[in-house]
Image 1 (cartoon, rainbow, N blue to C red):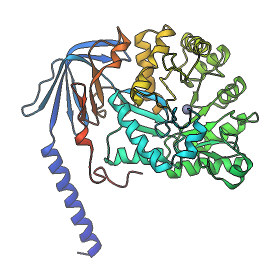
Image 2 (image 1 turned 60 degrees about the horizontal axis):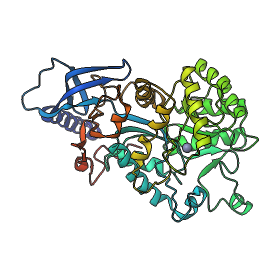
Image 3 (image 1 turned 45 degrees about the vertical axis):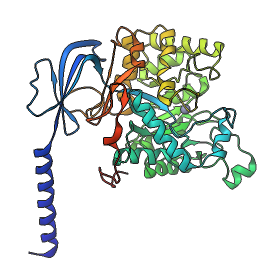
Amino acid sequence: MHTLTKTKAILLSVALLVSATSVAAAQVTAIRAGGLVDPEAGTVAAHQVILVENGRFTAVGANVAIPPGADVIDLSALVVLPGLVDAHNHLALTYKEEPEHNVYYLTYVLESTPLRAIQAASNGIQMLNAGFTIVRDMGNAGNYADVALRQAIEQGWIPGPTIINSGIIIGGMGGQFWPTPEMALDHNIVYPEYLEADTPDEIVKAVRQNALFGARVIKICVDCKPWGYTVDEIRLFIAEAAKAGLKVEGHVQTVDGARRAIEAGIWSIAHDRGLTDEMHRAMAEKGIFRAGTETPLSLTGHTSPERFERTVASLRNAYENSVPLTFSTDADYWIPGMTRGEVAIEFIETWKAADIPPVDILRAMTTNGYLVSETADTRGPIRVGFVADLIAVEGNPLEDIDALRQVRFVMKDGVVFKRDGVMTPAAFFHGGPVNGWRIR
Ligand SMILES: [Zn+2]
């Protein structure tokens, strides 16, 4: 046998042996659910059995037989539902009162990318503990701390939500900042927090850079500067991102910016400041996702009564116009006494204030979250063949959305992360990339 052919044959038999072993050793987990919520249908089915094998759901129903030897998890006192999605968070950014007085411009000066990557790992665990199994991490992660976070979770080093990350936010010179000439011309101090692209060539290159370094979505500053991006420039972003299979989210803060982003056919719009009734109608018509980042009044210091009133009215208007709504927090700060997950779940207060029915709040947090994250065909719904992510709570969230505040159980990728209200993440920590170092 030719040496190369021989090597191939050996590799093949090893591969077959490995797969045969894993099939033989596959442990079945059987979950007894007191209730099982289908957010899309808006229903709860009583007394369901869910089987999980090799990290996926293999059976769901009332009359599913539990195979002998299965590891049975009794959640019959709880209501099981799919994992939650925060469609806009910043896990690698945490500004705070001490020492930077919540001025986030200073956080970039004070904290290194490696430190922020470790903060992101911790914030990710805190989000998973609160029931968020998918987080779209929309930039402000230094020099690609978001990519490191996603890789560490996917390779199997640490537990965390599924991360859909943007890499560095792309904007015109300065991005969201107004750097001094010393900073901007020498690209120091607050760089590389934003990736600058002012011309068509730079736009193409910036998108390719983020795609190359591991972004899963492209985030752009549509109107952070008065000149902003034109409709054609936004279209160029969308076309270039599409080559890498990526969608584009726009940070939008003016009505004009919103109009341009909508006309260009952007995937999703972050923040509600530019979203009028007219813009909402246009978004609904084009199916553009709204990540409104609606800060509740209860997060003291992060909004004002006047601002909150506008936020609630805008969210209500979007709902009435049937805009595809996602649950998004823009969480990027620390409130002493609260985890990042507790900060995120607090945002349901705004949705309640907008008088949105629990079923539609839950759809924003699940169904639309999977759609905006582009996981809807693989992860999210509790259906046979899907990746086994689920959570369980004490009450029925379709009756009382506040039930989501007390997540008692979390399963991620078929592995138990939290049980009886306590994190038990040991099975997620590994001394090496157990899922393969090739995950990039
Ligand atoms: Zn943001």
